[in-house]
Image (cartoon, rainbow, N blue to C red; front, side, top):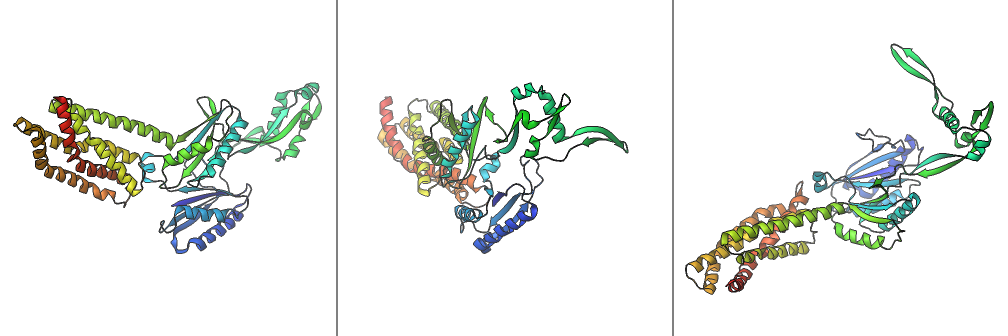
Length: 461
């Protein structure tokens, strides 16, 4: 599902917006034809549950598009075609919104996956650096909807009082502010009570333009003084809001990421592009968004993986009453990790958070085969078998249960690797990580672990 949010020039009425959107819809129908499952538009302000779209007026519109078969028309192709259509419409701004993925929906992630924070104090310098970073990110084909926190600037009328001229005319700044407020916002004249309810009677002059604003007269000491005689009127564009973090001004550049594109690769390219920009002293950039959450998640999962390895070692050391042979069992974990990474390389998939959780699970699953083999070797040694003979005999005795336990686990996870139904993007990477690790750990356990056991046993003696 794709949503296109459009904004026509301010002051565009509803009728003109409807004609423009109808023309865009017709061109979409001509382009995609019978591949469109749903196509509808919403023109004008929409009642929202929040105040996020407080500036939404008649000059806004939303086009919702759902395709029958996305594979026939990939998102990149549709967005490129929409760019060609919308660029022909003069003075229009637009952005795309895709349907959230399963992982984003479950985790409640609503922000853009790529967020670049530029920190500094001077607002003009911050705006310039933010716009430069936006242009660099627009050159990456994997990103779309590249926006900044300065895109929603609003025009503001600033009246700068000349204190020297005002002092010569004995003008009080409070009197000027009060008079301007009465002209622009009106003045409460009285109250009117009707059917038990009291309402204010507001006395207000007609709306004035910027040129007429300069001609407003302020009564000072029995004389009338024009605003432009004591002040300078300027129209400036200012940000809708000034964002701060840790008491420092921040400019944001946000971008959406194409599906099935590894985030870490895009982040590396962004760092290369932003590294070419010249940042003044006390100005710097930082990549946050999903990248920041990804770094934190991988750090926590790495700690969990190390903790699981330590716990497995402690249990094995207590059960085998040895500090050496548990290392033989733990060697299965890197053998399993090799298979997990290898299967992702073969299938061309990225190693995401769910796959990493599967690797943590392997820390407790893959060692089962080694436990069966090492335990059988220890039993045969206690029965008086020689080391080499015990290793060979344990392998022949345990090969069947090792293969059975691995195959049952692999076959049980195999349906999860098929990408169908809701939540397939969550299940598939984790199942692939476990299956790939079990395949290599099972095959190599029967070859590598006996050899390592012999070497470590001689070392322990």
